[in-house]
Length: 546
Image (cartoon, rainbow, N blue to C red):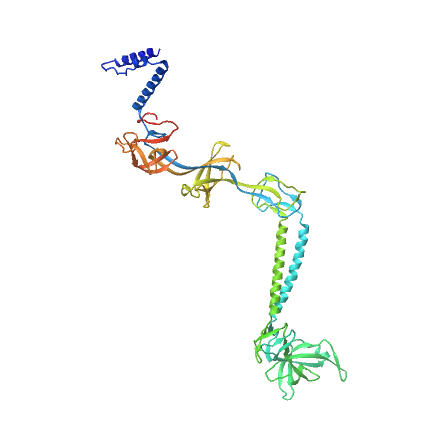
């Protein structure tokens, strides 16, 4: 039976070759050899013949790359437009969100909102019973007042180290020297004001009742009988009975001292037509001792004997470590009381729980009548004035992104609609994983009709666009920016298709599928490139499928 098949094959081959003037193709004569074989050997021989024929067919169709699992794909450089985009995916988030918690514990007296309500920033959401805290605040206020009084007293003591005169005049005597220790109340100097002298004289009571303050008077000095102008300074309200049953009232008269009047000078006076019933001696306007208010050591004599000073002038300056320490301690006490009161007031404010942002109440967990503990979550608020998404951009592309850049956003949950976004923030703190760094880029979406927080969306940023440029598939450009181009020249590389050789090119932008060729290739040039496959590969000429 095998012999008949071989005969038929030989006849068929001879018949096909007999057409025209072509010489019949010679087929190896293996019939006689096969006929003498056993049945098993005949089958093996047929298999060997089939393998030889297949090998011959492969030799006619192309060249196999030794030890390769790659095959060439052929294409043509075309003129087109390329748009380079950066894409990303993520989950929408609100512009801001806040879970309101509490720092205090107590009974909730009231709440002012429900889920879905829009609340303003700083609007009171809950009021918690604060009666105990209010008592603590009042106590702290009293403590602060007491501390302030202590501090004021200490400051006064510090000021009292400057021993001052309360009136103007001439320092007549200094009773201490530098280095002396003085006690509180000790006399340290004397001061006199003799610019004006006063003379107190008795006048008949009925006449004195007609005098008035400031009325002119004439004073006559004993011995020289010199007269000086004066004025009524005061009239006593009480009457006195003098010898001879004369009823009088004392009248005080002031006289400008021409410089020679002393406190031993005697004189009489007349007011109008009324004269004094007796003479009297002058008194200085001021003649007083200056005393230390606090204890201390004399550090300096500021105004020595004979100095003319005005009211409030410092006569002696003292030092005292104890007074200085007392002031500092009192100051610390005031500050401590202030801080305590501030903390209590802050805590009291916490009993009025306010909204930290303006937004929509998404969840309400506590209501009036509940008792809350410190740290409890009360409600969640979203700011839905806009939504945002974070894109992760590769380090190779981050330089192409800038704030304000337009972003196209699509959502599977909102079919058939495209949303407009813009880049609002580029985080320069990148995240590196396995040697690759990505940078978070925040995108804001203002028109959110149909979008909700939590939805998954896709984003696209157009970073570059080239119109009417020459382009080839991205995979055709190999390392070093080389492309396998049909030039008709014989390549030095035996593994490349015949008539092809590598050409250096300059590339431009890419959309992930095609890359712009700036130079090195012209429109219509035929190119070849390797695509990976799992079986044997063969190199085919242009137009043939690999």
